[in-house]
Image 1 (tube, rainbow, N blue to C red):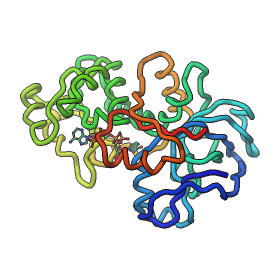
Image 2 (spheres, helix red, strand yellow):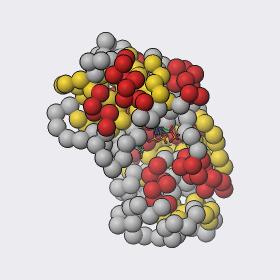
Image 3 (tube, protein in one colour):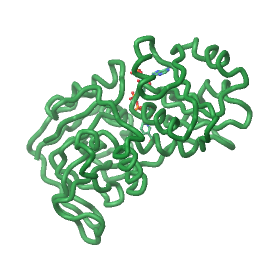
Image 4 (tube, rainbow, N blue to C red):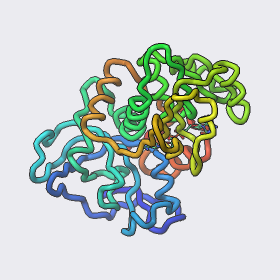
Length: 307
Ligand SMILES: NC(=O)c1ccc[n+]([C@@H]2O[C@H](COP(=O)([O-])OP(=O)(O)OC[C@H]3O[C@@H](n4cnc5c(N)ncnc54)[C@H](OP(=O)(O)O)[C@@H]3O)[C@@H](O)[C@H]2O)c1
């Protein structure tokens, strides 16, 4: 079986075609993968960030997938052979499982049916980013009239969160580069603010009393500095563990599940959200896809074509 693997951390991911095919254990679904995407988890794994949770080698990279059910394990009752599905191989699955692979085995609860109206490439980039965005916007409990600041709106999570926030009736502010203005407005951002240190003053200028809610999808290793521009009693969510702790603060750590993936599928089909695909790479070029995420300016999702 073909897969993109990391054998030694710090070495570039490599394509191999000599790996044994996985089997669907009890409660698992074996998926023939057609499409996937690049997430920061892949970059983190490739750089050895989770060495303790990933003791086995080689590790197969790739978390998101869309594909066709090849086999089902004992007890699986919601999908059958030949069904089109999408989802995520979670970090909790015994590594080295991954989706940058011809076949992947993952728990039944980590996927859902792909609606016929949803194209495979979009389904293949959706699970990780859209689940995080749905959970974050749920946590912010937005109502019409609220103003929310989305930091990281040009990226996978933030771009989807912007659209969900607008659908909830909120006004969205987002920092971006000058060249991002049209892109961000196209997603529904009401006010594009300068990115960097000027962002704080810009938020204060637009909302002197502070914003009602904040999603930070950028800050790592510290509590979000944007908390200073949230009004007293406002809500803060982060996908980077930057929300801090206490009332109104939520760190999104949960992975995809069938119920949330079903909501994502419905949002994509009814047009509540769309997921811009910045670039698409063949599986053989997955290392370049990783570089593109980490070294280039990201707008939307970077797709990986597996089949
Ligand atoms: N908890 C979860 O379940 C979960 C799920 C998905 C993702 N995450 C995490 O959430 C974070 C975002 O993920 P993602 O997939 O959306 O990443 P992404 O696609 O790289 O998006 C981040 C975006 O933010 C932009 N950005 C960087 N610094 C900024 C700043 N100071 N102000 C405004 N925008 C800025 C980036 O631009 P540049 O490309 O120019 O830097 C990029 O466009 C990552 O840390 C990821 O690990 C967590």
